[in-house]
Image 1: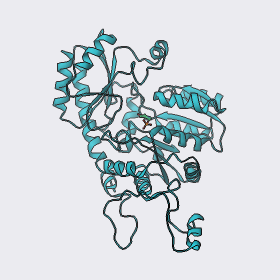
Image 2: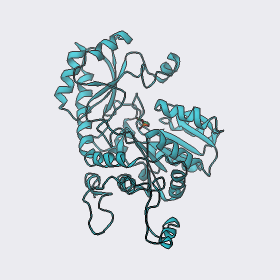
Image 3: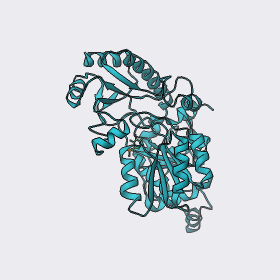
Length: 392
Ligand SMILES: *Cc1c(COP(=O)(O)O)cnc(C)c1O
């Protein structure tokens, strides 16, 4: 089945019974009742399918997890209370029986760098950074660090570099490391990391999958090999997603492929309009044929689906001009998230990359005149018209 069909059907109508709801209800019970102790004992022992306690499993979460497995081609999924909880669960599972060492991409979501440096590093895990778009450089760092785990984002933030998951997975496998891919920006419509050899695919479902700016959530999807470790860790630490958020996420996912197609198409139109604007110095977009990772993008993503994120630099602009430009936006929402139905803009220097020193930002190529745009599902003409009047 195609992803559009799976998104609508998978996970729902799981249990034949006296009556079967067409869509999965919000199951709020924290524990489950059985007619006999014998049966409860069998459920605890996992000899019989059933639910016992909401930190272990919950029917609303199980439905969402089945849906995520279908979308990503995985064996087991864990619905988590945030994207960060999901990243933590994935990395901790990956390192359970491996060397306590991580090689991470040097362009990553700010909080992910924080997770590595402020949680894993103090716990005794050594952390190295590498450019995952330079495979020779990555091989050298991996040979030196002998990591238990490599962590990367399919599409990096905010300069939108694209790592070759298949080749990076080969490097990971050779080193005996697990590959954890934060797939939030790309979504399973563009690629499925597990099918390309990654061991864990991680999402902030807060973004494209839920898609309406009203859910904070995450998901980890993994293969057979890591299924038990991930499930055990989820049950022990309990980073699970509540039933209301599971419901909202499933409701969002049903239209995610449609929304994403529209958002990707809008991004192509907006990026090409921006490229021709005299006040725009540079546009960073995965659909640009001159993109430094164009060969990987062609191989990894379907034609026309390059993601719906872009960044651009405004000629000779500093903080003041950027503030004036962003304050002039009438329809585009100035906010820190991304992937929602509405188009959103963010100023990386002030928000996502605020904690970095100006020097560190400069090394990463993030200049003071750079803004990041997440295209929504509005009419492309209206997005362009708003940018045009704000740039005037
Ligand atoms: C938002 C985001 C996260 C964190 O997700 P939360 O749901 O906010 O915890 C991680 N990685 C990427 C790429 C993100 O965009």
